[in-house]
Length: 139
Image: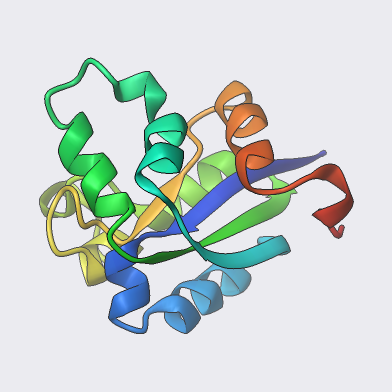
């Protein structure tokens, strides 16, 4: 059964021209890109997206970073898309990421770790509509 997940290429990945490299890895892993857009989040939009982390000490730094430049948001689909995308991304901290993962190969640090992905089906169900409406999802 096909599952969907949000993929985001963060400002450091966009700034360093890694969009194509990330998308190639996604497609090579057999995930389908069913929606794609480039945009820049305002601070208010970044605060809304990361509201779940509002009480965490890194919240303001994360909001500042995520609104500092363009991002690429995408919806990926495929069998077990969430776990497959998370495996492809690697651990949040690139020091702990497995060899060959996006974060091991491209991340600068734990915050500027190049990509984001939904961590569970309920999270994906909240995150995808933040960037895309149902008519924009092309299976």
